[in-house]
Image (cartoon, rainbow, N blue to C red; front, side, top):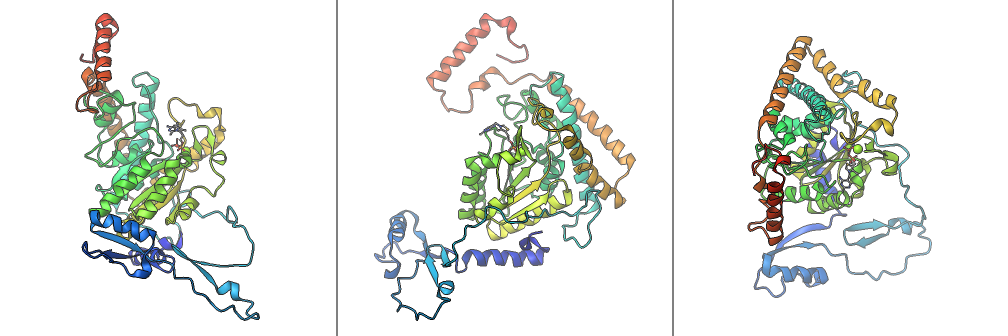
Length: 486
Ligand SMILES: Cc1ncc(C[n+]2csc(CCOP(=O)(O)OP(=O)(O)O)c2C)c(N)n1
Ligand SMILES: [Mg+2]
């Protein structure tokens, strides 16, 4: 595991100190905060005046306070050094805004990749056995059983709801098969006050937070109990109660939004962070880069959890980026980062729990790259056997299955049995089938909802569209679905 994450709370503090000193040390830019008296014509020392300071001054009237940046030293007119001082180049530094830079006379390009790939933190081996001398967050029997039961529930939901789509009962579905550990173990490591901004393959987080099967089914059917009032495609869940921001399909838009939320949590001194998820494909979007940079410079407590599952629909990872995955991108933005085995629930739990503590305590974003594999098709609109070998899928489905791996560990502690498994599966199946039936029988939201909630007073073009639609319904009443009140 990366050195800054090495031990439990004691070392979290050490790490945090390191983070702080690396940020504010000689390389640190933001080092003072000045209260400026509104009446003072020259609140800053003369040597500090620069265009930046003048900009700050113009803001003083509005804000009352400004933050001041350390200026670079005034140019020193040094005497030329003695010729025999051949080491000179190595000692001299450029005093640059943001931190000193050492000069070198060696002309060398930094390599695009280091020789060895960033290692992947894990706690359990492939068979679910605890590794020797591994530092991880302990979980109680109750917590471990809850994590496992949620992983199984998620898996069962995916199987049954995928089938429901195939039967034509819902129009679209998307599973998180193979990614159950990232979903559930990351959720378990968070506090309910943390605000989650998902991509779209993280319904397990919502499940963990208590979103019921009925609530899932209502959204998928778009009935009148759906919080989105039937206006979104299936799987676009959202819940105010569960601090889970509604899924929006345009990829990566959630990242800059998460930073804004995290910044506001910091301003309000809340003991909470924002947590946003993204796939490997999402990291090619501009919003990914804007989000990371924005988070770094605003020192916002946000966790970026990247589910690197090797594929973005049919785009293989080698066509997505040439870097060592995603974890190295954090460093480019000055963000502490870690790579974890996304199929190891204990590793995900440990990394997310500690990342959360550091993010909140030290006001820093953290990037977590969780290595995993999408065992299912991208969605019900995809057939992944067209672009990847079946034995690759089988390998991840069996040898690297996150659910059976975690079960082995839970069972080895004497916390789980075949009887408990059978009881859980029967109960979940019954609940889910009941929820689907209920949701199917419930009528859809009334037609007027289609035009509501965006404008206080709908503009003329929307009013025209509504009138036109109502006219069309009158003309073709026999084709209009009977469960949508007009
Ligand atoms: C801005 C944007 N561009 C393209 C798409 C179409 N699209 C939907 S999913 C997807 C692939 C995303 O891959 P990845 O981020 O790896 O997520 P995964 O499916 O692996 O969970 C694409 C390109 C989109 N939804 N939004
Ligand atoms: Mg992907």
